[in-house]
Image (cartoon, rainbow, N blue to C red; front, side, top):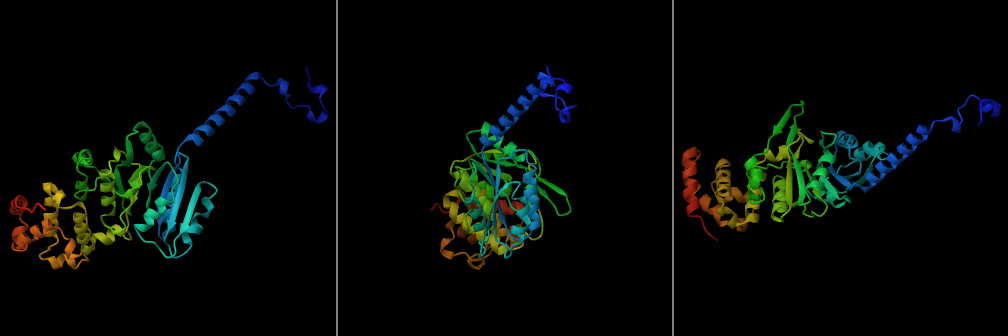
Length: 355
């Protein structure tokens, strides 16, 4: 056995391999094996694509990327489809290229929403994907892991969405609780989402890559509702997670704010949606009541009040014209009385056109 006097002078005082305990080598080997196992597990995890349609505001994009980097789930790529007129976002994300796979695309000319949304989705290569608006972010560090585990334990499910939680500019949290009855009925009555979008914005939702439905590029206000209806009508199963996994950032520059203050957009897209679901959908009295209230609340008293928003008169459903035919002859002051309105709606419903 070697000792310190039998070694070279410069090597004396250092422990020899033969003097190290067997436990040291055992622990080192175990560590190497564990690291190899973890690497294999990582490589075997399905890739998740986080698709960000971007427009200006690089600080929002950075916040979103930072929330992805904090995730416990690491098999992630980020896809950015940038409609900005400058290179600000590209420059802001350059430092992250060494930390995570980022696929960046600059659109010139700008595609605009929701074409830009679809462009981002079409660039994804993951087994799962999310459309994450740039002003939203992952709240929980295990958010992506939770989504993926839900898919793995529910093979019949094609999209998973979490509780809709919005954050005001002042930091106030708005928990928009899902309506249990609507959650249960979505598969059977997908059109009811136009009454209340219980799924929320796209950032709440992760989908399997086999889902090829894309956003109807004609919409901006009902774009997400129409998308979810397409998913459900195509037979894609879903799972709701009652957890704050994603935060939805609210601010005055959002398209949602523009639409909410633009009655023409709301009227036009609701009439388009009615045409899309067809007269048959109005056998459902809840859909009938929704459109009855739409005409009443937006004071639509003539066909011109609809066509002035950009709707082609020839595309307006007979059932909408039937509602309008009665409402235009009743003073709004009377029509807005709850019991009176419900009674009139019901009798109007009973004599609705069947074609």
